[in-house]
Image (spheres, helix red, strand yellow):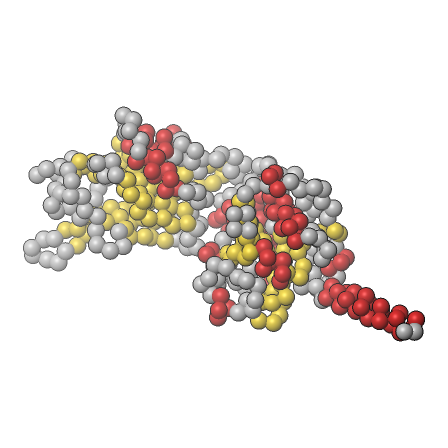
Length: 421
Protein backbone atom coordinates (compact mmCIF):
# COMPACT_ATOMS: atom_id res chain seq x y z
CA UNK A 1 0.00 0.00 0.00
CA UNK A 2 1.27 3.42 -0.92
CA UNK A 3 2.15 5.83 1.92
CA UNK A 4 -0.32 8.37 0.60
CA UNK A 5 -3.15 5.79 0.74
CA UNK A 6 -2.14 4.80 4.27
CA UNK A 7 -2.20 8.43 5.38
CA UNK A 8 -5.62 8.84 3.79
CA UNK A 9 -7.02 5.83 5.69
CA UNK A 10 -5.55 7.09 8.96
CA UNK A 11 -7.18 10.44 8.33
CA UNK A 12 -10.55 8.74 7.86
CA UNK A 13 -10.31 6.54 10.96
CA UNK A 14 -8.78 9.13 13.26
CA UNK A 15 -10.10 12.39 11.87
CA UNK A 16 -13.72 11.47 11.16
CA UNK A 17 -14.71 10.81 14.83
CA UNK A 18 -13.03 14.06 15.80
CA UNK A 19 -14.98 15.85 13.10
CA UNK A 20 -18.26 14.32 14.26
CA UNK A 21 -17.51 15.20 17.90
CA UNK A 22 -16.71 18.80 17.02
CA UNK A 23 -19.94 19.06 15.06
CA UNK A 24 -21.88 17.80 18.05
CA UNK A 25 -20.15 20.32 20.28
CA UNK A 26 -21.03 23.13 17.91
CA UNK A 27 -24.73 22.34 18.42
CA UNK A 28 -24.91 22.87 22.17
CA UNK A 29 -28.20 22.00 23.84
CA UNK A 30 -27.73 23.89 27.11
CA UNK A 31 -25.85 26.93 25.81
CA UNK A 32 -26.62 27.57 22.14
CA UNK A 33 -24.35 30.61 22.16
CA UNK A 34 -21.31 28.55 23.20
CA UNK A 35 -19.64 25.29 22.34
CA UNK A 36 -19.72 22.62 25.02
CA UNK A 37 -15.91 22.41 24.96
CA UNK A 38 -15.61 26.11 25.82
CA UNK A 39 -16.76 25.47 29.39
CA UNK A 40 -14.11 24.85 32.04
CA UNK A 41 -13.44 21.19 32.76
CA UNK A 42 -13.57 20.55 36.51
CA UNK A 43 -10.49 18.89 37.96
CA UNK A 44 -11.70 16.46 40.60
CA UNK A 45 -9.48 14.94 43.19
CA UNK A 46 -10.11 11.35 44.21
CA UNK A 47 -13.73 11.02 45.34
CA UNK A 48 -14.24 8.38 48.00
CA UNK A 49 -17.63 6.77 47.65
CA UNK A 50 -17.99 6.26 51.39
CA UNK A 51 -17.76 10.03 51.89
CA UNK A 52 -20.94 10.54 49.83
CA UNK A 53 -24.40 10.02 51.38
CA UNK A 54 -26.29 6.99 50.17
CA UNK A 55 -29.24 9.20 49.23
CA UNK A 56 -29.18 12.91 48.43
CA UNK A 57 -31.91 15.20 47.15
CA UNK A 58 -32.19 18.97 46.71
CA UNK A 59 -35.98 18.65 46.57
CA UNK A 60 -36.51 20.47 49.91
CA UNK A 61 -34.86 23.54 48.33
CA UNK A 62 -36.69 23.26 45.02
CA UNK A 63 -39.68 25.44 44.09
CA UNK A 64 -42.97 23.64 43.62
CA UNK A 65 -43.25 22.13 40.12
CA UNK A 66 -44.60 24.56 37.57
CA UNK A 67 -44.85 24.46 33.80
CA UNK A 68 -43.12 27.32 32.05
CA UNK A 69 -45.18 30.13 30.57
CA UNK A 70 -45.40 30.23 26.78
CA UNK A 71 -43.50 33.51 26.79
CA UNK A 72 -40.45 31.94 28.45
CA UNK A 73 -37.81 29.87 26.75
CA UNK A 74 -37.37 26.39 28.21
CA UNK A 75 -33.66 26.80 28.85
CA UNK A 76 -34.15 30.12 30.67
CA UNK A 77 -36.92 28.66 32.81
CA UNK A 78 -34.79 25.69 33.83
CA UNK A 79 -31.76 27.82 34.60
CA UNK A 80 -33.65 30.48 36.57
CA UNK A 81 -36.70 28.84 38.15
CA UNK A 82 -34.99 25.59 39.06
CA UNK A 83 -31.19 25.64 38.87
CA UNK A 84 -30.34 29.09 40.21
CA UNK A 85 -33.29 29.19 42.61
CA UNK A 86 -32.20 25.90 44.20
CA UNK A 87 -28.62 27.16 44.52
CA UNK A 88 -29.86 30.33 46.21
CA UNK A 89 -32.21 28.42 48.54
CA UNK A 90 -29.36 26.13 49.60
CA UNK A 91 -27.19 29.17 50.29
CA UNK A 92 -29.93 30.69 52.48
CA UNK A 93 -30.81 27.39 54.12
CA UNK A 94 -34.40 27.95 52.98
CA UNK A 95 -36.44 24.73 52.88
CA UNK A 96 -39.94 26.22 52.84
CA UNK A 97 -40.95 25.35 49.29
CA UNK A 98 -43.90 27.71 49.34
CA UNK A 99 -41.64 30.67 50.06
CA UNK A 100 -39.06 29.34 47.60
CA UNK A 101 -41.77 29.23 44.90
CA UNK A 102 -43.66 32.43 45.63
CA UNK A 103 -40.82 34.75 46.59
CA UNK A 104 -37.34 33.49 45.86
CA UNK A 105 -38.01 31.95 42.43
CA UNK A 106 -39.82 35.07 41.19
CA UNK A 107 -36.95 37.30 42.31
CA UNK A 108 -34.35 35.03 40.69
CA UNK A 109 -36.28 35.06 37.42
CA UNK A 110 -36.67 38.85 37.52
CA UNK A 111 -32.92 39.28 38.07
CA UNK A 112 -31.95 36.51 35.67
CA UNK A 113 -29.02 37.07 33.35
CA UNK A 114 -27.97 34.43 30.88
CA UNK A 115 -24.82 32.77 32.26
CA UNK A 116 -21.81 32.83 30.00
CA UNK A 117 -19.88 30.16 31.85
CA UNK A 118 -20.48 26.68 33.19
CA UNK A 119 -18.38 23.77 34.34
CA UNK A 120 -18.09 20.42 32.60
CA UNK A 121 -17.99 17.60 35.13
CA UNK A 122 -16.19 15.15 32.82
CA UNK A 123 -15.32 14.27 29.24
CA UNK A 124 -16.26 11.40 26.99
CA UNK A 125 -13.10 9.61 28.10
CA UNK A 126 -14.04 9.62 31.80
CA UNK A 127 -15.02 6.20 33.12
CA UNK A 128 -18.75 5.71 33.60
CA UNK A 129 -18.44 4.99 37.32
CA UNK A 130 -16.41 8.17 37.82
CA UNK A 131 -19.00 10.18 35.90
CA UNK A 132 -21.69 8.99 38.29
CA UNK A 133 -19.54 9.82 41.33
CA UNK A 134 -18.83 13.32 40.05
CA UNK A 135 -22.54 14.04 39.59
CA UNK A 136 -23.24 12.76 43.11
CA UNK A 137 -20.38 14.85 44.51
CA UNK A 138 -21.78 17.99 42.84
CA UNK A 139 -25.29 17.38 44.19
CA UNK A 140 -23.86 16.79 47.64
CA UNK A 141 -22.32 20.27 47.45
CA UNK A 142 -25.81 21.73 46.99
CA UNK A 143 -25.48 22.30 43.24
CA UNK A 144 -28.11 21.01 40.80
CA UNK A 145 -26.72 19.62 37.53
CA UNK A 146 -27.92 20.69 34.08
CA UNK A 147 -28.18 17.95 31.47
CA UNK A 148 -28.91 18.05 27.74
CA UNK A 149 -30.39 14.94 26.09
CA UNK A 150 -30.30 13.74 22.50
CA UNK A 151 -34.00 12.83 22.62
CA UNK A 152 -37.10 14.34 24.15
CA UNK A 153 -39.78 12.29 25.92
CA UNK A 154 -42.86 11.15 24.06
CA UNK A 155 -45.44 12.61 26.42
CA UNK A 156 -48.15 10.23 25.21
CA UNK A 157 -46.07 7.32 26.51
CA UNK A 158 -44.47 8.71 29.66
CA UNK A 159 -47.41 10.66 31.15
CA UNK A 160 -48.14 9.34 34.62
CA UNK A 161 -44.91 7.37 34.91
CA UNK A 162 -42.16 7.93 37.46
CA UNK A 163 -39.19 6.82 35.35
CA UNK A 164 -37.70 7.53 31.94
CA UNK A 165 -35.21 5.45 29.96
CA UNK A 166 -34.01 8.31 27.76
CA UNK A 167 -35.82 7.05 24.69
CA UNK A 168 -38.34 9.19 22.87
CA UNK A 169 -38.81 11.48 19.92
CA UNK A 170 -36.05 13.04 17.90
CA UNK A 171 -35.02 16.44 19.22
CA UNK A 172 -33.04 17.99 22.05
CA UNK A 173 -34.35 18.17 25.61
CA UNK A 174 -33.06 19.86 28.77
CA UNK A 175 -33.49 18.72 32.36
CA UNK A 176 -32.01 19.36 35.80
CA UNK A 177 -30.64 16.62 38.07
CA UNK A 178 -31.59 17.35 41.70
CA UNK A 179 -30.93 14.07 43.52
CA UNK A 180 -29.77 10.47 43.49
CA UNK A 181 -30.38 7.14 45.20
CA UNK A 182 -27.33 4.88 45.33
CA UNK A 183 -29.45 1.88 46.32
CA UNK A 184 -31.09 1.85 42.89
CA UNK A 185 -28.23 3.63 41.08
CA UNK A 186 -30.71 6.24 39.88
CA UNK A 187 -30.88 10.00 39.50
CA UNK A 188 -33.84 12.33 40.16
CA UNK A 189 -34.60 14.91 37.47
CA UNK A 190 -37.01 17.77 36.80
CA UNK A 191 -37.89 19.66 33.62
CA UNK A 192 -40.06 22.57 32.52
CA UNK A 193 -43.33 20.64 32.15
CA UNK A 194 -44.70 20.98 35.67
CA UNK A 195 -46.56 17.87 36.76
CA UNK A 196 -46.87 16.47 33.27
CA UNK A 197 -45.15 13.32 34.45
CA UNK A 198 -43.75 11.73 37.57
CA UNK A 199 -44.67 12.44 41.19
CA UNK A 200 -44.39 16.17 41.86
CA UNK A 201 -43.06 16.74 38.37
CA UNK A 202 -39.97 14.67 39.17
CA UNK A 203 -38.76 11.61 37.30
CA UNK A 204 -36.14 8.96 38.04
CA UNK A 205 -33.56 7.70 35.57
CA UNK A 206 -30.93 4.97 35.99
CA UNK A 207 -27.31 6.05 35.78
CA UNK A 208 -26.78 3.80 32.74
CA UNK A 209 -29.67 5.39 30.81
CA UNK A 210 -28.68 8.88 31.90
CA UNK A 211 -25.06 8.62 30.78
CA UNK A 212 -25.98 6.77 27.59
CA UNK A 213 -28.39 9.47 26.44
CA UNK A 214 -26.94 12.67 27.91
CA UNK A 215 -25.01 14.84 25.49
CA UNK A 216 -23.98 17.61 27.91
CA UNK A 217 -23.70 17.66 31.71
CA UNK A 218 -22.62 20.82 33.56
CA UNK A 219 -22.99 22.78 36.79
CA UNK A 220 -23.12 26.57 37.20
CA UNK A 221 -20.42 26.56 39.87
CA UNK A 222 -17.24 24.59 40.30
CA UNK A 223 -18.23 21.93 42.85
CA UNK A 224 -14.65 21.44 44.03
CA UNK A 225 -14.54 25.08 45.16
CA UNK A 226 -17.99 25.20 46.80
CA UNK A 227 -18.23 24.49 50.50
CA UNK A 228 -21.36 22.94 51.91
CA UNK A 229 -23.81 25.78 52.39
CA UNK A 230 -24.69 26.97 55.85
CA UNK A 231 -27.60 29.13 56.85
CA UNK A 232 -26.57 32.75 56.51
CA UNK A 233 -29.91 34.39 57.11
CA UNK A 234 -32.85 33.53 59.36
CA UNK A 235 -36.05 33.67 57.31
CA UNK A 236 -39.31 33.54 59.29
CA UNK A 237 -41.64 30.72 58.34
CA UNK A 238 -45.33 30.58 59.10
CA UNK A 239 -47.15 27.28 59.56
CA UNK A 240 -50.86 27.51 60.19
CA UNK A 241 -53.91 25.42 59.41
CA UNK A 242 -57.40 24.68 60.74
CA UNK A 243 -59.68 21.71 61.31
CA UNK A 244 -63.44 21.47 61.56
CA UNK A 245 -65.20 18.51 63.18
CA UNK A 246 -68.84 17.65 62.52
CA UNK A 247 -71.25 15.03 63.85
CA UNK A 248 -73.92 13.38 61.72
CA UNK A 249 -77.40 14.31 62.91
CA UNK A 250 -80.33 12.08 61.95
CA UNK A 251 -83.58 13.69 63.13
CA UNK A 252 -86.84 11.88 62.40
CA UNK A 253 -88.48 14.94 60.86
CA UNK A 254 -85.80 15.90 58.32
CA UNK A 255 -82.90 14.59 56.26
CA UNK A 256 -79.59 13.80 57.96
CA UNK A 257 -77.13 16.69 58.18
CA UNK A 258 -73.72 17.48 59.63
CA UNK A 259 -73.52 19.69 62.71
CA UNK A 260 -70.26 21.35 63.71
CA UNK A 261 -69.00 20.37 67.16
CA UNK A 262 -67.65 22.93 69.58
CA UNK A 263 -64.19 22.22 70.93
CA UNK A 264 -62.01 23.71 73.64
CA UNK A 265 -58.26 23.73 74.05
CA UNK A 266 -57.11 22.25 77.34
CA UNK A 267 -54.00 24.15 78.41
CA UNK A 268 -53.01 21.54 80.97
CA UNK A 269 -53.34 18.56 78.66
CA UNK A 270 -52.07 20.42 75.59
CA UNK A 271 -54.78 19.32 73.16
CA UNK A 272 -58.36 19.88 72.06
CA UNK A 273 -61.28 18.22 73.85
CA UNK A 274 -65.04 18.19 73.41
CA UNK A 275 -67.64 19.26 75.96
CA UNK A 276 -68.49 16.65 78.57
CA UNK A 277 -71.75 15.68 76.89
CA UNK A 278 -72.11 11.94 76.52
CA UNK A 279 -70.95 10.56 73.18
CA UNK A 280 -72.68 7.27 72.66
CA UNK A 281 -70.78 4.46 70.93
CA UNK A 282 -74.09 3.50 69.23
CA UNK A 283 -74.80 6.86 67.64
CA UNK A 284 -71.62 8.85 67.23
CA UNK A 285 -70.59 9.41 63.59
CA UNK A 286 -67.98 12.06 62.92
CA UNK A 287 -66.20 13.73 60.03
CA UNK A 288 -63.09 15.92 59.81
CA UNK A 289 -62.51 18.77 57.37
CA UNK A 290 -58.81 19.66 57.31
CA UNK A 291 -57.77 22.89 55.59
CA UNK A 292 -54.19 22.55 54.35
CA UNK A 293 -52.33 25.55 52.93
CA UNK A 294 -50.51 25.31 49.63
CA UNK A 295 -47.08 23.73 49.75
CA UNK A 296 -47.51 22.05 53.14
CA UNK A 297 -47.24 18.44 54.28
CA UNK A 298 -49.90 16.96 56.56
CA UNK A 299 -50.25 13.58 58.26
CA UNK A 300 -53.07 11.98 60.24
CA UNK A 301 -53.16 8.93 62.47
CA UNK A 302 -55.66 7.58 64.99
CA UNK A 303 -55.02 6.08 68.41
CA UNK A 304 -57.73 3.94 69.99
CA UNK A 305 -58.44 2.98 73.64
CA UNK A 306 -56.60 -0.33 73.34
CA UNK A 307 -53.43 1.49 72.23
CA UNK A 308 -53.72 0.44 68.60
CA UNK A 309 -52.47 3.28 66.38
CA UNK A 310 -53.30 3.50 62.67
CA UNK A 311 -51.77 5.82 60.03
CA UNK A 312 -54.85 7.18 58.29
CA UNK A 313 -53.77 9.68 55.64
CA UNK A 314 -50.98 11.88 54.29
CA UNK A 315 -50.57 14.78 51.83
CA UNK A 316 -47.27 16.31 50.76
CA UNK A 317 -46.74 19.55 48.84
CA UNK A 318 -50.23 20.17 47.48
CA UNK A 319 -50.04 22.86 44.80
CA UNK A 320 -53.04 24.84 46.02
CA UNK A 321 -54.95 25.42 49.25
CA UNK A 322 -56.86 22.20 49.85
CA UNK A 323 -59.71 21.10 52.10
CA UNK A 324 -59.70 17.36 52.70
CA UNK A 325 -62.74 15.52 54.09
CA UNK A 326 -61.84 12.53 56.24
CA UNK A 327 -62.77 9.83 56.03
CA UNK A 328 -63.49 10.28 52.31
CA UNK A 329 -66.26 7.66 52.49
CA UNK A 330 -68.69 7.15 55.38
CA UNK A 331 -67.83 8.45 58.89
CA UNK A 332 -65.57 7.81 61.84
CA UNK A 333 -67.27 5.67 64.50
CA UNK A 334 -65.95 4.64 67.88
CA UNK A 335 -67.60 1.39 69.02
CA UNK A 336 -65.59 1.18 72.25
CA UNK A 337 -66.00 3.27 75.36
CA UNK A 338 -62.89 5.28 76.25
CA UNK A 339 -60.59 7.92 74.85
CA UNK A 340 -59.83 8.09 71.13
CA UNK A 341 -57.19 10.44 69.75
CA UNK A 342 -56.65 12.01 66.38
CA UNK A 343 -53.12 13.26 65.71
CA UNK A 344 -52.67 15.72 62.85
CA UNK A 345 -49.15 16.86 61.99
CA UNK A 346 -48.39 19.79 59.68
CA UNK A 347 -44.95 20.74 58.36
CA UNK A 348 -43.23 22.56 55.52
CA UNK A 349 -41.21 19.49 54.56
CA UNK A 350 -41.91 15.73 54.54
CA UNK A 351 -41.31 13.55 57.57
CA UNK A 352 -39.18 10.65 56.29
CA UNK A 353 -40.62 7.24 57.20
CA UNK A 354 -43.23 8.90 59.41
CA UNK A 355 -45.08 5.60 59.90
CA UNK A 356 -42.07 4.32 61.80
CA UNK A 357 -42.62 7.09 64.37
CA UNK A 358 -46.31 6.11 64.58
CA UNK A 359 -45.15 2.62 65.60
CA UNK A 360 -42.97 4.18 68.29
CA UNK A 361 -46.03 5.91 69.68
CA UNK A 362 -48.10 2.74 69.66
CA UNK A 363 -45.52 0.62 71.47
CA UNK A 364 -44.66 3.27 74.07
CA UNK A 365 -45.83 1.63 77.31
CA UNK A 366 -44.67 4.40 79.60
CA UNK A 367 -47.15 6.09 81.89
CA UNK A 368 -47.37 9.22 79.75
CA UNK A 369 -50.16 11.39 78.43
CA UNK A 370 -51.10 11.35 74.75
CA UNK A 371 -49.11 14.54 74.15
CA UNK A 372 -46.07 13.26 76.04
CA UNK A 373 -46.09 10.05 74.04
CA UNK A 374 -46.36 12.02 70.81
CA UNK A 375 -43.38 14.22 71.67
CA UNK A 376 -41.42 11.13 72.72
CA UNK A 377 -42.06 9.39 69.38
CA UNK A 378 -41.51 12.44 67.15
CA UNK A 379 -39.02 14.31 69.36
CA UNK A 380 -36.68 15.06 66.45
CA UNK A 381 -39.42 16.84 64.48
CA UNK A 382 -42.11 18.41 66.68
CA UNK A 383 -42.00 22.13 67.44
CA UNK A 384 -41.79 22.73 71.22
CA UNK A 385 -45.20 23.31 72.75
CA UNK A 386 -44.36 26.80 74.00
CA UNK A 387 -43.71 28.05 70.45
CA UNK A 388 -47.15 27.09 69.13
CA UNK A 389 -50.18 29.36 69.42
CA UNK A 390 -53.40 27.35 69.68
CA UNK A 391 -56.78 29.07 69.46
CA UNK A 392 -59.00 28.21 72.41
CA UNK A 393 -62.39 27.72 70.74
CA UNK A 394 -61.40 26.70 67.22
CA UNK A 395 -58.96 24.06 66.06
CA UNK A 396 -56.37 26.36 64.60
CA UNK A 397 -52.65 26.48 65.19
CA UNK A 398 -49.98 28.94 64.19
CA UNK A 399 -46.24 29.08 64.72
CA UNK A 400 -43.47 31.41 63.58
CA UNK A 401 -40.24 29.57 62.88
CA UNK A 402 -36.76 30.30 61.63
CA UNK A 403 -34.91 28.33 59.00
CA UNK A 404 -32.25 27.71 61.63
CA UNK A 405 -34.48 25.29 63.53
CA UNK A 406 -34.71 21.62 62.61
CA UNK A 407 -38.04 21.11 64.40
CA UNK A 408 -40.71 22.27 61.99
CA UNK A 409 -43.71 19.99 62.57
CA UNK A 410 -46.81 21.33 64.34
CA UNK A 411 -49.07 18.78 66.08
CA UNK A 412 -52.79 19.09 66.73
CA UNK A 413 -54.30 16.49 69.04
CA UNK A 414 -58.06 15.86 69.27
CA UNK A 415 -59.48 13.78 72.12
CA UNK A 416 -62.83 12.04 71.89
CA UNK A 417 -64.09 10.56 75.14
CA UNK A 418 -66.84 8.05 74.38
CA UNK A 419 -69.04 7.41 77.40
CA UNK A 420 -71.80 5.00 78.22
CA UNK A 421 -75.28 6.42 78.07
